[in-house]
Length: 251
Length: 55
Image 1 (cartoon, rainbow over the protein chains, first blue to last red):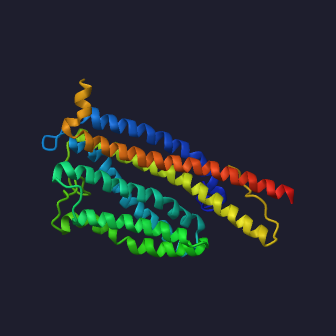
Image 2: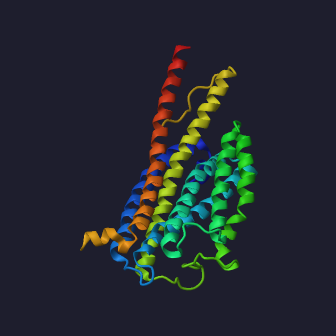
Image 3: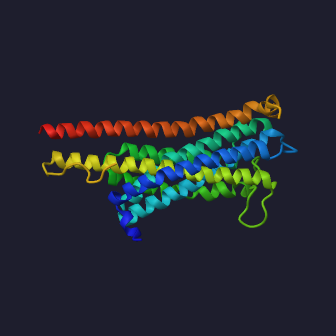
């Protein structure tokens, strides 16, 4: 299989269209399985009671917020360095979903903080750096929206995305570097996770569901971006008098 | 299984169900916005074709 073929938007468009239903269906199945495992199989926590069940969406959302930011920055950097249009479009497509998950992790975290810490919000290192992550996403999105020329918008976005990557390890290690209210990592790269297996299973299934959901919605958005840019290019060419018709590929 | 006990979430109903409600609104909202964008795009495409046909 020739993967370079899919580096061009024209070839990627129908390929992505074929993949989307599979990601969407498997995401839906895993959400149902994960919620079942989280609410009906995983036991009540001995310290936090049932309030801990927020973890099944809070932790996957927080991870997705960080991972999608790194992915967005990588795609933006590749698009900038190699002038790869599809890669820059991918960065734009990821940004909205990444911002959504970051916002979700802040809201669910605050709903979890109230019963366990007694407050919806503290200016703690973990929370503050996550809020900065949300602002970086919003900055990327509004910067791109404010520049009409796609290439310039992609380049400006790439600079912001790359500089902002420094914030991701800060979020990750914030609970170790600073004395914070937020608990430490339950799952580490090295060593055993400090969580009961039925709870851990529910969280991992939800994480997989969030990944598949993200791939599905990002691909849908990417297809729109490809189509819109192609239409704009066709319109511009038409205005300039050159005989360019509709995009050559269909929906 | 006692459903009223299940829905009360040991007294944390507001926080637990609130979290999942926000999740539903955000993810569902993202999907709805995307699907509406598809309709809009189709419409634009069609009208674009029409103007081209008249020329």
